[in-house]
Figure 1 (cartoon, rainbow, N blue to C red):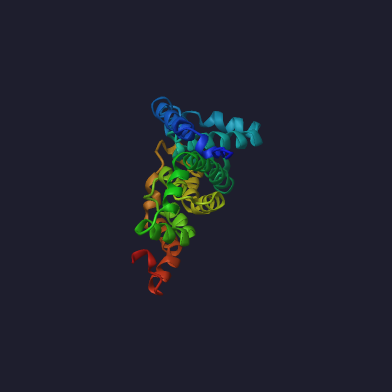
Figure 2 (figure 1 turned 90 degrees about the vertical axis):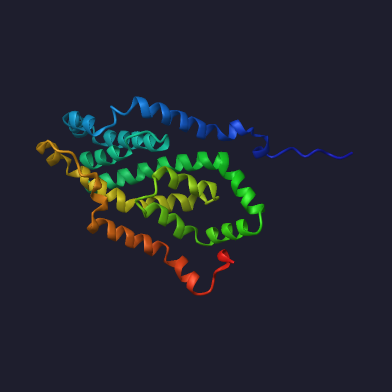
Length: 249
């Protein structure tokens, strides 16, 4: 008498259960886009700056932990205000500590989206790509051979939306540790720029002005970041010119 094998846990899960985390993130993001716009804004930061500074001075450790928790929720649920949160980190904690808090929180939030996407569509897409042949198989092999370069590239390029950069690695089956390391390191340049802008908000508020968020596209800042982008894909370029062109065959 043959024994029926039990289906694995991935098969047992219905499509709804697999995609439930992504559905929740999407629902919260939609609701947040309409309800939180006035609460997470430059104007809200400007109007409440004295209260925030007073609370920070009285509860420094609690302020850091609370700030990181809120930032994780903003990124993890794709809520509006990630840029304002980064500015707030610089405003409250200065450039050095603010950058550490911002990068840590952004990485944790990005990891939540990555895990949710991988649990849903990511595993199925990876399985299909692993089982495929021809051009798809060569594409998958090329991406696997250059994962570090591609991960750092999409993080460093200012034009790649943060949310998209969280989803692509999940759909391509990137290991969690690679995603976390490349995210943490890759967002440091941009995070440092915006945190430093936030650290100078005191003077901006005093002049009654708004911060220049387009500063990251200034030549003296953009060109070094683009240089890092080129450096990140240098291994791919070297492989191409040394004859490893399997991806294009």
